[in-house]
Image (tube, rainbow, N blue to C red; front, top):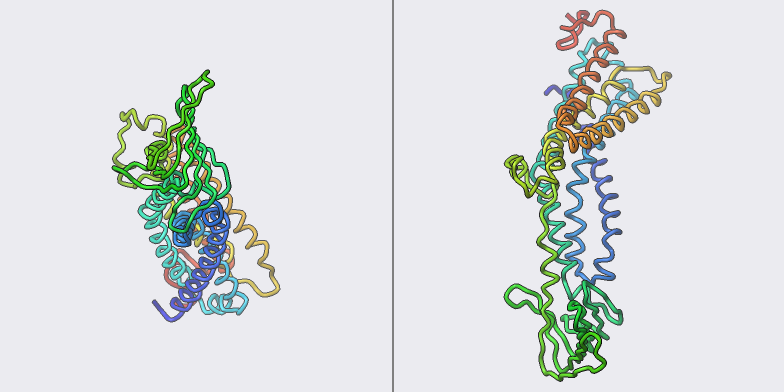
Length: 377
């Protein structure tokens, strides 16, 4: 790259990193506020809290990276015009491609980043979030809260106190999973443990009160140690994976004749093609920004309307892409739309840039667009 191209690349690159970091920080704060219940009501550690908020960032990073790149490109081109650098470049007969080339290079690098996230990191992140949520949801130790009656799938839990090592004091458990018998467990102490891969609540020094349906008598049995099978918690983790939680290789190898995914076939199809189309949007952002601000203007000419039009177009394009994905869920016709939307806008933005430059510089030919102006020859 020439000195000028390196300057544009460096300016846009640092702006992109700054905007991406700021947006990512805002998103992480929002995720942290949403996950505060892990620390307050579910009694999880700070490491689990950081992990839960961290794995939610990559999917959102994939979405905001093109937006951050658009903002960075707008900032770079507007700064260069404000400093009269674009005017000097045009007056010197510099080819528009010289300005666009470093921006396109950054767009390609961001496209590679987005492709890595959407094809590999994002599905792994969603799957990790699913496993973590299932683990937290099915963890009896997180359900047990001091001084509160917690109902879950036919079981009611209560403990007066919970020590830091997980030991429960003064435990009450009411079991109504059997519609014919109601069982109530009272124990001085309890602890959660895994036996043969299944969760058990082990109670010590307590009593079992059992009453059959339509019977007034209650049988009481004292025990020193009693284990309650809590397999209902393990059962929650056996659900099938959603489309976004499947790896790209899984989506590519799915058979249309598989009855287990018949109801999800449309979503799986849309998810697969979305992943391949997402890396196109950083290039769309660059070309739209260049189309609205690439041409030099004097400081007396306002560029606010051009920036606003670029924002409207980029939002409309993203919404059109989401709509195409929704159509793909119902029909295979949407597959073409998923790729057509970004590719069409790229062509329109490129043609608009060419028309904008040739109308301002009549001596600029097709060869001048790619090499230099005739005046410089």
